[in-house]
Length: 168
Image: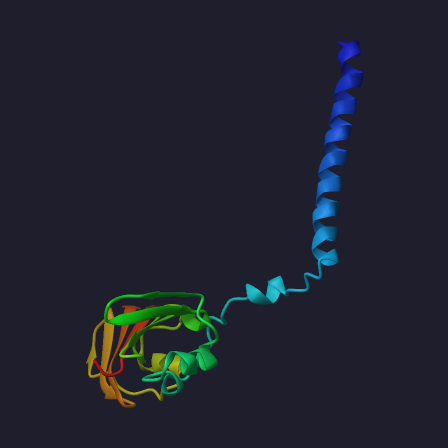
């Protein structure tokens, strides 16, 4: 049993040293390459109680793709179809469908932990208003702020997403 103890200890020490060297090297390589990206800030979550706007719908609705990108930042994915173009943006995990070149349908899915109530409109820069139709799972506002329709879905405790129709 003793003749296997020394080689086992040597193998164990070598393995620990290899892992430590790999960890040191991976941390050093990022710094040497000029990686100054703030990863902690990139993964911060929304304040669950915040009602601050993710963006102002008036600055996005009915606008050209370049104008929307000036407000929401560049899209991280776009795809075109025969009659529309769909792009996804980071703020609010927002999806915008461009019809005839203008932002016409919007879906906002990252609303924090806002409840499904009339105050939810503040997340897209609108003033709270009573919904025309309201239930425990859905709220609907028609002709609000020049928009054709705003629908909110979720549970009374948490809104899951907003669907906004501008014109069509």
